[in-house]
Amino acid sequence: MNITYIIGVVGAFLVMVVGMIQGDETQMIKFDQIGNFVDGASIFIVIGCTVMVLVASFPPSALKDIPKHFKILLNTKGNNPLTIIDELVELAQVARKNGLLALEEKGNQQENPFFKQCIMLIVDNNDPDQVKEIMMNDIEQSSARHDAGAGMYDKAGAVAPAFGMVGTLVGLINMLKGMDMDSGGAGNIGGAMGTALITTLYGCVLAHMIFGPIATQLRQRDEEEVLCKLIIVEGIMSIQSGANPKFLREKLLTFVAQRQRDDGSGKKAEG
Image (cartoon, rainbow, N blue to C red; front, side, top):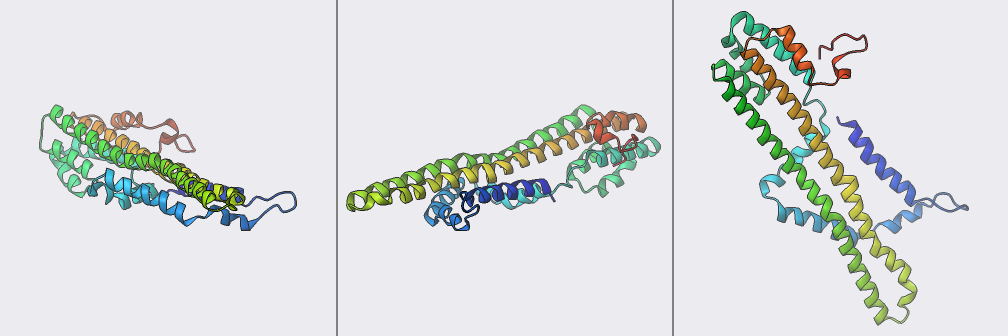
């Protein structure tokens, strides 16, 4: 569970709500003020228009991946470089002892489809340059797809404040029209203006507290996946060339930060 994301988003909403109910010196907290920030029409305009723009901007194949994005967002156990390094070192030991063909069984047991594909490519004794080209192209195309997914939330974060302003304009127009028709309407300017500005608030909240963090988190997950895939590529190519398992471990550990390599005792972490 991605606890930092949950804490950050929930904490931001709590801070905002606390700010909304702050009172004056005579009454520190005014819970009734929270109603000032709720407006059905504003919610309808901002959320409804933002969703419709996404529908108009992206194909159904991209929109149906939204549940998968949240699953990726909340999962923190998907990519562990140290675990992958351990697996590669084990494969190197098997290959040095029994040859590359002995890796076929290990490949069939591998749950990671990219890892399995890489193992099978060297088991089939393909040309090393061609193997690396295939693997690197897979990484590039996969990363491009992930960036397109994050771009959907960038788009939502860009249009939400815009529709917040649209809602504000709608509210101001209705307010001014009401003043023309009602001679007593000038006394309600403050309340009407507040209602008109609520949509801007909603747009900013959606953009910076919802969509922005989602896009950032998805790109971070992509970076983690790319790192693990690059480790796999380097490890597989080294195994194909007959690298020593101990040397291979030291080589692959250079892909991760020093604090990840060492545990509290200063020994190499085994995963």
